[in-house]
Length: 195
Image (cartoon, helix red, strand yellow):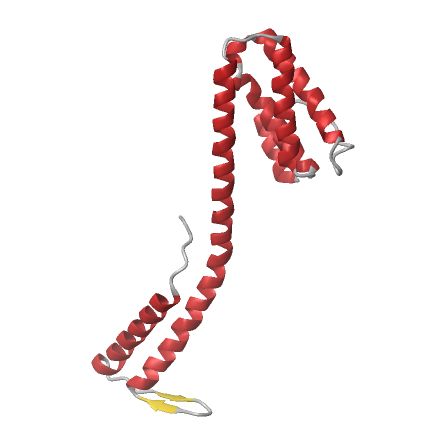
């Protein structure tokens, strides 16, 4: 569900209408009585019901909107990450289309270097992010390049590990980063969740 903010005038209009409706029901149909006193004003009957309902609804609306702001911000961040993911997948598809059928060791090194650079760049100096990016990429490289053959994939994965270490040593905050052991997808999720 997407969090959407309601325009303040629409919210105010709805609150006033609801307050009028409540006042009409309470004092027109149910024949209630009531008094609203303030330091400056005093209202009785339907006006009191309208004012009390208006103040209650406005308070609830303000509290509800406070809760929606973090949700809207989170939704914006998710959309931004999805956009980045689509761009990276598009680049990856283009690269795999260009590389389809090639088994050159030099090409494996070049591809590994490109992936290593992106993994380190996307970590933005955060070693946990680098670990997650590295593990995800290492797990997915065989899927992306399965057509190139098993020997080529072994070279690619070895070169990717070496190049990632070299790239990480060039970034402050990642100079001491160590290559994580191979994990299964479940272990990786548990590891990220415990961090």
